[in-house]
Every structure is written in C-alpha cells, then in structure tokens.
Image (cartoon, rainbow, N blue to C red):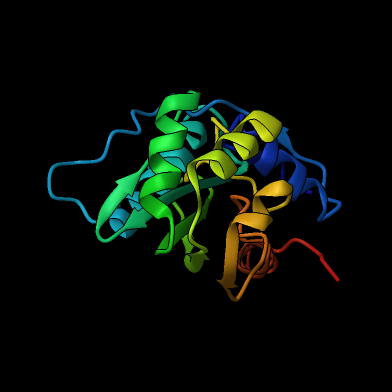
Length: 191
C-alpha cells in the first residue's frame, strides 16, 4: 500500500484520521499560515491545505499526503486560534448570538499528480452568551488551540443553538466524508 502522510501535527486531525483504520505517518508541514491581504477565509483554507500537502509531499516522494486547514469566518473576517484566555473571551463574545461559517479544506496529493481537493462549509449558530458563561466554559475546557475558541466535540456544544453541516467531522478539523471519497479515488480500500 502507498504510504499515507498527514501534513499536520494537530492531535484532532490525527484522531479523526485514525478512525478510517488506515496506517499513516505524521509530518509537520512548516507553512506560514498567515492569511494574504484581502483573502477570503474560504480561499485561505484552500490555499493552506494545498500548501501544507505540497510542503510535506516534497519531502515524502511517492506518498499520498493529506493537507487540511480550517478558517472560522465571522462576516468575512477570519477568526484564528485564540492562544489564550483573554483573546478567546473576546472571540466568543463576538460570536454570541451570531452565525459563524467554518471553512475546512482538504488536499490529497502525490508527487506531481493533480490534487484531490474538497472544501466543507459548516455553519454554527451561537446562542446569546453571557460573559460569566463564556468564562466558565473557557476555564473548563481551555480551547485556546481551536479556531473559534470552542470544542464542539466537548462542552463547547452547549454554546450553540444549531450546527448546519454535511459532515460533522469537518467542524473538528478534518472532513472525513470528503477525505474518504478522495482516498478511494487514490486507490485506498475503505468500506
């Protein structure tokens, strides 16, 4: 079987990919994840997923490489990983009572072959949040390494009124439905 490499050190993506039961390696992509001037959040996600896959594919000839990126979109403004309590508080206050789009892109490629790519859109509807609720949540889960400052697979689900998605794994960071489709096209045997 052709080697499979995840171009990410995200534990969330690693856990999701493990669900598919395929052996894989992990390789850090070393890509600047800064958005470009005037770049739309969806375009950032697509560009970075491809850049991550290409960076690792250059070091892993012959392997199929999975790049993925997610960008949270608040009215066209990208929300990154908060990195700490105060920025997370500000992010969640900005999201309170709002609908936020999460663009999650994947890119599967090998050497110079055309990439197999997909972009998932998940919309999260936040309920109106009080400051003390947000602080209790942040203290309980500390989601500072997550786009949007929440973990939907944990206590963060209590922050929402609704999630609209075609793939529930996309919001966690790796859309397995689209990835499974691409892996089958690449010749991997999945159920």
